[in-house]
Amino acid sequence: MSDPVATTVSPVNSHNEWDPLEEVIVGVVEGAAFPPRHLSVEAPLDQQQRQVFRDRAGTPFPPERVVAAKKELDELCAILEAEGVRVRRPVPQDQSREYGGPGWKSTGLYDAMPRDVLIVFGDEILESPMAWRSRYFATSAYRPLLKEYLRGGARWEAGPKPELPDELYDLDWSDGPEGGPGHSVITEFEPVFDAADFIRCGRDIFAQLSNVTNDIGIEWLRRHLGDEYRVHVLQFDDPHPMHIDATLMPLAPGKLLINPERVPRVPAIFKGWDVLHAPKPIIPDEHPLYMTSKWINMNVLMIDEQRVLVERQDEPMIAAMRKWGLTPIPCNFRNFNSFGGSFHCATVDVRRRGTLESYF
Image (cartoon, rainbow, N blue to C red; front, side):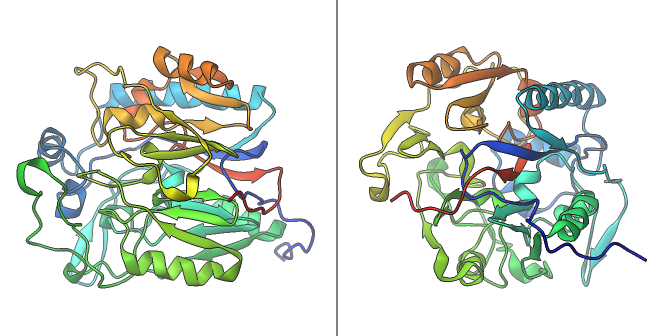
């Protein structure tokens, strides 16, 4: 007989990005592969990245990059454990297996970015209804952990499972003129969103519309969360929006890190907060970034209100954090950056020591 569902204190508890971190999921890169070619995948990328995805569609990521990124993830895990954080890992999936739905087929991407897939609100851990066909089964790698958390007393929820038909995508999509912001590649056919398009500040949740998150998806989450939360939709100057955490990152109550190119005006709700303009990234041009901009340098992870994980080679960001009174913890992560994320993307904070509060 299987274990009964516990009625004790939930093993899942997180309300913001800065309470003391106690347990975290860290992704894995084994088996990472370029997905089949699809317009929705190309929309958030620049022209050079799109060509790489077209040329390598359906093939594994370069094995030397996988090995290097895995080493950096292991370093991250060791640092977190040394800081007193319990680290959990997903089970790598076979991304080459074909699957599909009515009218479409696909293979997978990776299990490297749990922040894209899962989001925690208090004692609830929620699966995202993702817009990329290559991520339709993206939560499979995390299912053993989700079952464990459920049996331990957590609430396990999921957004509406999308069908991902052609009607979800604007098949005539193109960039705006002269590289300016274009409209989203996804329509309002059904609710879809990536968890990484939301940032949590206690009772206030900040969201952006993007090439993977639509308005009806945000509205679904707003209704799902109910009156305890306020969901705010922010607008930025980003020609290829996908995921908010390289644009705007609250690091502690009253401290906000912003992308100076994408956030020309700080949202009014943050009036009175200290604002740090992220220093210009220093990732070399020759370093491959398959699906992100160099501004991934601001994708940091707070262990608490003081300690922050920062890429070891990013000396300007390390200096900025120190100047701001924070304690940067360096970790090699540039090879992992190639896969499209950094410390915040590569993790999901399952448990932070704190309660639901309002900071505005």
